[in-house]
Amino acid sequence: MKKKGNEFKGLAGGKNYRNFARLFGFTAAFYRKGIGNVTLSDGMRALDLGCGPGALSFALAERASSQAGIIGIDISKDQLNYAQSQCSQYDCNIRFENCSMDELPYPDEYFDVVVTSMALHETPPDVRRAAIVQTARTLKKGGRFILVDWSKPKFGLWGVFWFPMICWGEQNRDNWRNVYPELCRHNGLQLKEDCYINSIARRQVFQKE
Ligand SMILES: C[S@@+](CC[C@H](N)C(=O)[O-])C[C@H]1O[C@@H](n2cnc3c(N)ncnc32)[C@H](O)[C@@H]1O
Image (cartoon, rainbow, N blue to C red; front, side, top):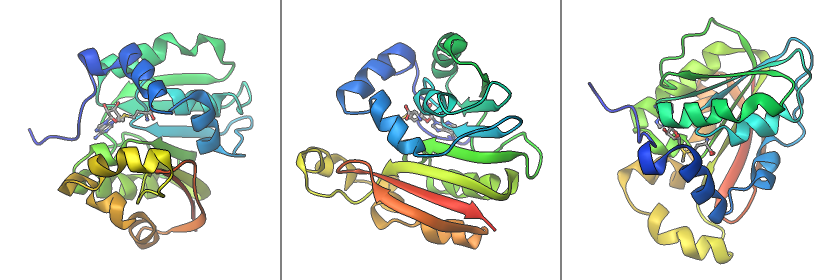
């Protein structure tokens, strides 16, 4: 079967991933900035693509009413199991499911918000393109897609540190070239906000027309 992306499992998954990510600045504050001022009120549904141990889902859960629902998906069962073990402290309904972001098993126009952080660059280019098609399909009209991932570094301290790793390899080219606004536009998702959260991580918010 064709590889869907880098699966973070074993030593690279679950609690280990979460601790390691914190060392690199991916703290709760980082994920809160990723979510920004988005809130989920009663009945609203959100999806987190490549959720890992759930940090972005949990930042969204802090801003969700008890009658809202969040689904995180990932190809790694280790990530999903750890995420599931952490969600009891949140009021809203959160669940984690094992699937690939390019094959979403949800109906058309089902979600109000789709989010993703640091995950698109872990997939092959055809998978991330299909994920954007699936995002556009499953979002409601007027719904938002929040995409957080690294982009061309701004040369602060972190930018210098990351530069050799992220300017290398075919897998990273889409992020370097910032192709997402055009790919999203092609699928009916218009860019509404665009800013850096730190020296390398860029937050882009798209809206479905
Ligand atoms: C760098 S981690 C980011 C995790 C999380 N979003 C965060 O910010 O902490 C990338 C995640 O994407 C997952 N992944 C890779 N390819 C995927 C795919 N095709 N569909 C869903 N998840 C995928 C990996 O297993 C991993 O958990």
